[in-house]
Amino acid sequence: QVQLVESGGGLVQPGGSLRLSCAASGSISSINYMAWYRQAPGKKREWVATITEGGSRAYADAVRGRFSIPRDDAKNTASLRMNNLSPEDTAVYYCNLNTGITSPKDYWGQGTQVTVST
Picture 1: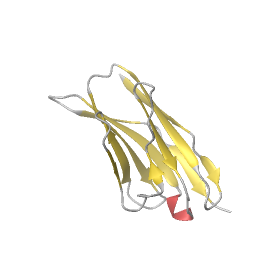
Picture 2: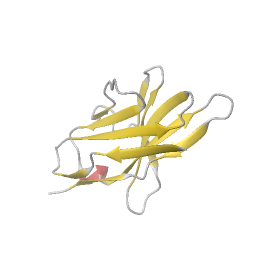
Picture 3: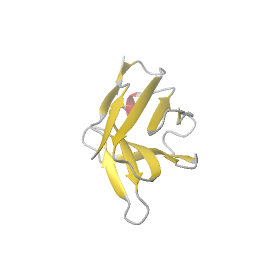
Picture 4: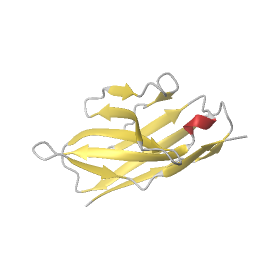
């Protein structure tokens, strides 16, 4: 069983920064990528960013230039650095892990709330 645990969410003022972390544990086979998604109230879950096992990164247009996935030397972890946050970034942020070669599987964390407000 694979478990993902996110941390680092909270309340921040517009223009502020937060760093989310995701730690994966359990029977993890080959990791293809780890990704971040978010879901705002009343909206569908949307993709935010991805880092592949090889270190390649991709970002959604809405966050490119403000969010980044920093280098993380800890095994099976991924972080999301969020700068210049705006109220539109308010959402529950979820960590996603995709593993396996022949039959890839997706795992999800429980989510962490990020609220950007004065």
